[in-house]
Length: 122
Image (cartoon, rainbow, N blue to C red; front, side, top):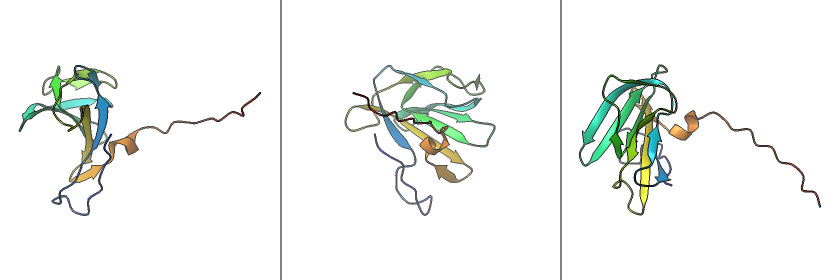
């Protein structure tokens, strides 16, 4: 996995999302409800972008899309399958998030998970 690089200026080079390990053909699901605003090729990669009611736009690549521009999706709906091509080693999903001109670490948008540690008994 490759993490998010917070950039001082949007025009600087950097990593504007996270790379998540995956397998070719793995189903990719929408992070939240919204409308598909892009579904197609950008340079060498297929991309799906979803505009959410919060104003956040999430982007997924390289994804062979199963949705079209204008489609409404719900949390967990399949939006396509992962293709090879983004990561140098192995296959990964590049997942990005932005509102307006500001990029966010998409992992920071996930709900917190409660972790409970129990004592080890012998």
